[in-house]
Image (cartoon, rainbow, N blue to C red):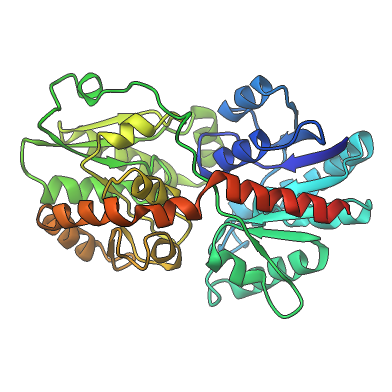
Length: 391
């Protein structure tokens, strides 16, 4: 039996953690023993332990700043934590002697060199969309390290693959497969809003308190554009804990605290809005939605877009390489000009008119997207990566 050490910094409910959970659930446990190394405790840990997976922690694990200057106090502290965590990581490698180290994000690339130095096969899973002309020195360093020290590279879509792929370095495109069959929990909107919602238009936003997901813009657009008393907005998100907020305050990062306060104020100012915690069991919540609203402020993979399309739920989302790929060049979603708030509002205002035609297209053509994110096909590709590494 071969041992795979999966490394990730987070354990909250989100795209990367849920994908990691799916990867481990799909693993042939007769052939492979998974061990997961995380930077902190969280909901993912309980899920892993329920699968009888060993979980280890290095509290100093964090990611290299993603598409940001490293010359800020916050990011300097992050870089120091990374350096400290590499020695601890090396100790863990010596202790458990894994056959494969699997990094679940591009921004853990410094760990590749340590694993290779210890003679271990390496995989890195690229989830990011880093534009070529932004912070290009950090970007080029990350890409060069990945090309040098990764035995196999997995990307979650075509754009992520294009960052690494060239004439001498191939990339495996494996989509974060979508299987909603075990993600159902009875969550009627009537109980969430404490009223009969059978004739209400309920808009859904899954962005939470993450600034780059643009939840504040969604709220402001909804409140200013959608005036009817027959409409509601449901938000999914969990507020950062007070310990995290104290750390941010210590590092003089007050902008995040201000953003959270603005978000809370915007929610409370419109009695048609509700917010509930994030959940893995999202299928019923999706199925009742009139439309999913997304305002990603930087381009990256929008799994909620693909999930909604598969369930025939209309989406308004930012136009970027990923959303075009996932929506058949915009045919199965309403795409507004990225970071154009006025265009987002215009698309929201016009949505009632185009909703019937979009629903029709979703029912006719969503099978294309369903095949793209098919669990069996993508699991097979991942198994081939493992076999190639160990052959």
